[in-house]
Structures are given as C-alpha cells and as structure tokens.
Length: 549
Image (cartoon, rainbow, N blue to C red; front, side, top):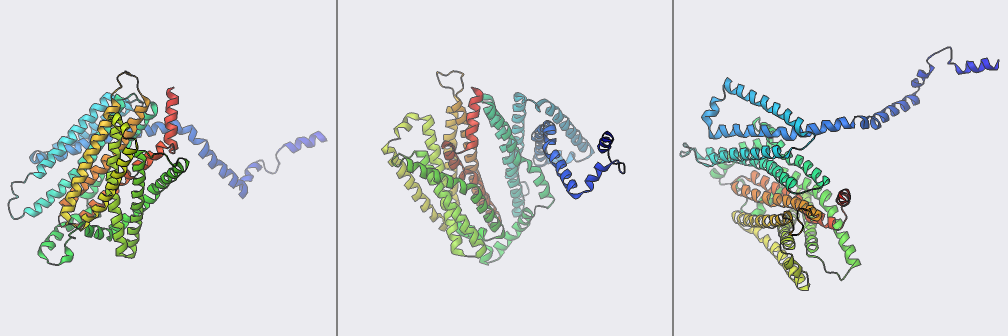
C-alpha cells in the first residue's frame, strides 16, 4: 500500500500531463522566466560570439580606413580634369566615359577586397607606406593644380562681370582648400605614424595605440564627399544662405548709404555682432558647456594638487614647467568665466557683461599662445641644450622666469588695445604673431623629436624606453599645438579675405575659438601625468615595462 502510494506521488497528475507548462500562465513565473532569458542572452551570448564580432569589427575597420583612399584619389583626379583639362573632361561624359568609370569602380572594389584579405590579420608596412605616399602625392598634385587654375585669371575676366566671376572662383578656392587640408591631414598623419612605427622599437601597447590612432585621422576626410554632395544638392542651409546672400550683401553695401548694412570697423564690433546672432548664441552655449565639462574639472584638479604640494613643501622652488602650467590654468579659468558671462549676456542682452566676456576671452587667447611658446622653448632647452637648462635652475633663473611671466601678462593686457584699432590692422598683427608662434613651436618640437630619435653614442641599437615614451608624448603635443596655431593662422587669413561679409567672418571666428579647445588641455593634462594622477597612463606605462621585463 505504501509503495503504491509513493509511486503514484512520483507520477504527474493524470488530469493533465503537461502541468509544468501551466506555470508560465502565472504572471510571476512568466516575469521570472523572461528575466532569466534576457539575462542569458546578455551574459552568455556575448562571450560565445565575441571572437566572431571582433573579427567582423577588424575587417570593417580595415575596409573603411583603406576604402576611402582610392575614392578620394578618383575624386581628386576627376576634379583635376574638370578644372585643369575641361575639354578632356567633357569628352569623358559620354557612354565611353561612363564605362571607364564603372570599370574603375569595380577594379577599386576588387583591390579593396584583396587588400582586406592581406592586412586584416597583419600589418604590411612597406606596401601600406607606398600606397599612402602615392595617395599623398596624387592628392597634393591634383589639388595644387586646381588651386593654381583658380588663382589665375581667366581669358574672359577682363570685362564688367569680373566681380561675379571672382566670387564664384573664390568660393571654389575655399572649398578646395578645405578638402586639401582634410586629405593632407589624413595622409600626412598616416605617413608620420608609419615613420615612427618603423623607426622606433616600440612596445606592444604603443604600437596598438598608434594603429588605432590612424582610425581617428580618417574621421575628417570621411565627411568630405558626403558634405560636398549635400552642398551641391542645396541641403546645407548655412552654406546655401551664405552663398546666395553674399552677392546681395556686396551690392547693398555699395549702392546703399545705410550704415547698418556695413560690417563693424573694428574687431570688437565684429565679435559683438557675431556673439549676439542666432548662430553665435548656439556656439557660445556649446562652447561654455564644453569648457565646463572638459576643462574645469582638470583645472580644479591641478589647483588641488598644487596646493597640496605647497602645504607639504612650502619653501620648495617651483619648476619652470609647473609655473607655466599654473599661469595657463589661471587663463583658462578666465576663459571659463568669460564664456559664462558672454553666454548669459547673449540670453539677457546685457552689453556690459558681453563686453567683459569678450575681453576675458581675448586675454586668454593671447596668454595661451605665449605660455605654449614658453613651454616649447623650455622643453627645447631641456632636451637639446641640457647644460644651459641645468644652469637655469637656480634663484637667478627663477627671477628671469618670473620677469618673463610678468612681461607676458603685460603684453596680454596691452593686446586689448587691438580691439579699438581698425579691423585690417588688428587682423594683420594677429596673423603675424600667430605665424611667428607656429614657426617657434615647429622648430622647438621638431628639434626635440630629432634628438629623441637619434641614438645615444654609447647605447648602440638598444632602445631607451624613457625616450620612446617621451617621443610618444612629444608627437601628441606637437600635433595638438600645430593644429591649434595652424588653424588660428588659417582662420585669420580667411577672416581677412571676407570683405564686407559678416556671416563668413563670424564663421572664421567661431572656427578659431573651437580649434583652440584641444590646446587648452595640453599643459594641465601633462601636469597631472607628471604628478601620477592620470591612472590610465600610469598603468599603461608600468604595465608595458613589466611586459617587456
């Protein structure tokens, strides 16, 4: 009896042979099973398919970075034929030219798939270097030929319609200049990384960092062809309004005596007009948020560490680089305050607040240039002339440094007088100083890189890891500073060429403001790295040394 009852209890109920499935009709059981299924998909599925998706990501990255190259070359060649050889270009618009185009595109895709198969798992340096050099030469030749053709006056430009012809060529010249800079930045950066990759015996971490940095160099050039297509289709509203309204603005400034149609006569008036426009308000708001999120925490961290050092060693001599960093942080705090005031004034309409914000921004802009140059000179003396640098570490050198910093601040406050000068004079002086600073930064940084690349006389072929790390940081600093001073020089040149067009002058000013943002982070981040407060870089450096050991 007992055995029979136990056997019966082990069997499922006779009324329903699938009672276990009825558990899912219950709401609580359904929620538990659904959450378990989702957790299984999120936790167990990624480790199972991660190698597959990693391979897919590698193949897609290789396809995108290398697939841009032939299409950029074909576009530059097509532009070269259209401008320099228009008769040949018109002949290639028939069916024969279309067949040639289709065959070229098919051949490009075949080469791309072959190249992906060769380079997805290993980096073939020599063919990659040859292809990049060839692409750089072709792009530079075609773009410079087009620019030369646009600069030269045409045979029919001597008549009365000269103004309109010049303006159309001027717009084409600016477009080609932007395209050439984006492509040269891409190919030139790749060549520079390849040279460092080959010439230096870098560790695995630095090699991977340089290879992944190449992907970021391709980002600006990826926007060239899509933006050109949208511009030709008339879908870029800002460019369309600027192009269509530029001729009308010039005609009105000539034929009308109304002063409101003329641009301001000095730089302050132009900046005030730009900051109060609709685009200016959006740009100021985004710029203030970027400074608050990116730069303000770094500056606060630098101030906190410097106060800690001073409390621990109140009588210690401050190093030259640290003193320049402290002054740079002070100027950046002025910039954050100025952008906050300008942003508030743009929404409230307080002119005095906007004026104070403009003065603080220009003070930061001038001081940032001087302190970057002084830091480059200090780095140049430390690496290229170490004996002179060691002599400049006593009390006398500290007095020279302090006097230099005081002179820099006096020059920065004196530069505020440029706001009241005529616009042409202030822009010409600013362009001269920006070009001079760019030359000094290039000379000092390239000299330091050259010394770091050369082996020591008694070391032989053995690689100094400290020099490799120093070279890596110097290349990053050089790239950021050249980007900052080069963009400033180009923006000032474009600003000078925009006669009677306020919108395009505002665009040049906004570009110059935004291009200076990466340079603001250089000295504070270097200070934090030397203090050992950048955990990622500290772990990377220590881990790379342990892996080598």
